Image 1: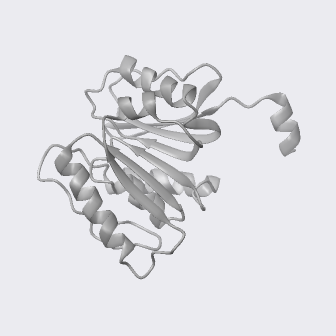
Image 2 (image 1 turned 45 degrees about the horizontal axis):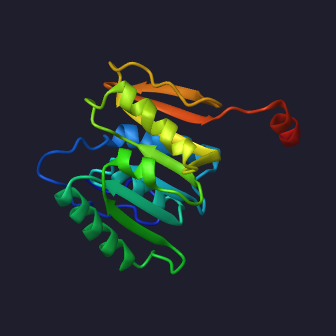
Length: 200
């Protein structure tokens, strides 16, 4: 598994022997082409929940993000992400104002306890068995604790056979795309009429 595009294109990602379900290159390319087209990755602060191999967060860094926080509950997977990030920090394309770190924690615990400046982009790729109600609670906690702000773009991957998530009050699914067995949802704060007039 390698970084698809950007400043770290071609860099190999260390992957666990088992226990993770990495996003396919086809789906990853579709997701990041979409985010690129919105211009949300440049200098972005990115949160990668259920980070697994760290592939989504690292791809975001490669494509212009400046800060990455990866959250992974498996000790072995978190250690491999840390190893990948250390290698990136020695890469010739790493810049001094970039930062990346990994937290060994459950995504639900992080969302319920973390606080601070909202992230620009949040990518969430839970196991397919992660219940829809748990997914909805996670989204609610991200918004309630200010981890997701009004300008945050949330990308959520689920099984195409799962029920659609229910965004928190004031948020909506702005796009939904299926790639084989994977459903991808883009969730954003609802736009008000004043927002639309400002952008006009």
